[in-house]
Length: 163
Image 1 (cartoon, rainbow, N blue to C red):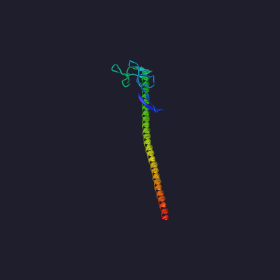
Image 2 (cartoon, rainbow, N blue to C red; image 1 turned 90 degrees about the vertical axis):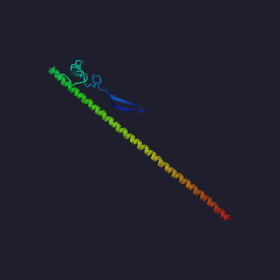
Image 3 (cartoon, rainbow, N blue to C red; image 1 turned 45 degrees about the horizontal axis):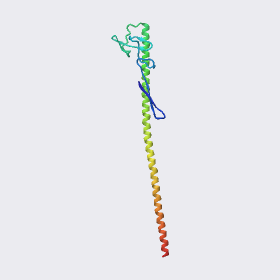
Image 4 (cartoon, rainbow, N blue to C red; image 1 turned 120 degrees about the vertical axis):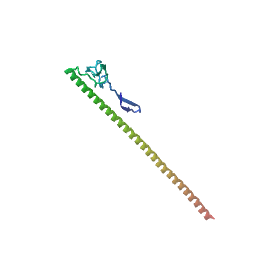
């Protein structure tokens, strides 16, 4: 079983998708090799090799064709071609899965970088806003001090006239 992808739903729950490759079962359509228990050819499941009289469960490289006749040889060639096509298809699917994983990784990295720069901009914007607000308050304070100074000096001038 190989991870073939993942999906995040609206609730942020992640579900993992997998692809299973079977060496002995054709039920899922991803059989790579197979055969009958005697090491012969089985059209339903593929080829099973033999080595020194012992059955090898998942091999085609030790297939004994010395006793095959014309029709059996043609069937063996067909099944080997089908096994190669299945392996090529499985390799292509694994390559596709690998590419999807790389694309997801690249997307996640870019998303993380984007979030980091966005947060940085928000912090900078907040700092600029606060700096502007501080300068406005300081200016108001200076104007208030000057107004009080003018008001105090005006009353002193008026008092000096009465003296």
